[in-house]
Length: 395
Image 1: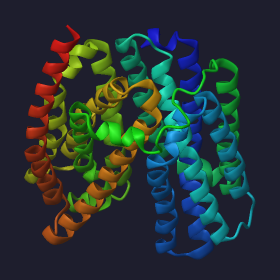
Image 2: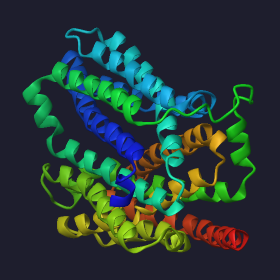
Image 3: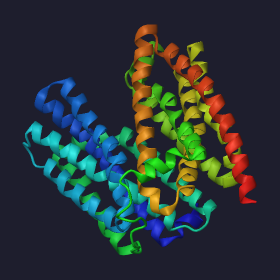
Image 4: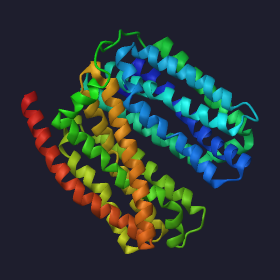
């Protein structure tokens, strides 16, 4: 991992992303507190939270393609500046709720091309595939660590600082990101052609079997995240206190950090690709064990193990971006991220429906795991064939 951080451009991109991720955790908590304090409505809190999710889907399919049509450093830094302005506006005390909702939508829309540019640029700064994969391990570890920090101290920090200051800190973090990227990331010309069809990258990906299989592997995560949506009823069912909800939510990202480190430390890129199908099945198989009604300690172990094996997603994402031509990586990456988020959203909703019908969170998790294993086996077999064919071509 240290070799990847030795790349000045990646180090700048990583730092810019990391500190803005921490700021985003504060914003998520601050928005929840701000909206509930204004309305006293759990429904409005849920609506505003959904507004942080839905625009990213539309932006991922459409606006992400801006990262191919314009210089990516410019897209990334300009996106960060605009988000800083928008989030700064949210920090103004007394902002009316309808205005707040509009700003949230705009901020997420603006973030889509920035995320696409970030992902494509990170691939561009490395010429070595294995080193690039290590860089994605670092990003995965950082993202999940930021989630853990948010779960552990986000609410306490916002309570101490106040919602306006929390939002202001996030706004400043975006300005810092823009400055770091402009200072230490080399300017490159636009990778794509402005005259290309708007959804050319999506059409190209749809024709590539190996990329479709990778997308299938990523969608399996939609079932693996179901325990996150059932953390509260799961804690109640296994006889744990309300405080255990945070532990149950933190187990998966903690396991992910450990799993990413182990994979990065001990397996080469080629070795990780060889066992990718097995790794994709493992977290779902782990969830099946919830049929035995585990106590809190065992539930935490199972969720951490699912998170650790779920770190296979880093290899899926890195391989997907590597196998896409540079001029299409913005749009293709947007498609990949959008599909992943949709799968996660559907998975959490499906878990809630199963839990409601079964009357048991543990049963719902086990059923989701079983369904996931049945879906994952044919995808894993397809991946084995795709990877073998790709290895033969490379030779």
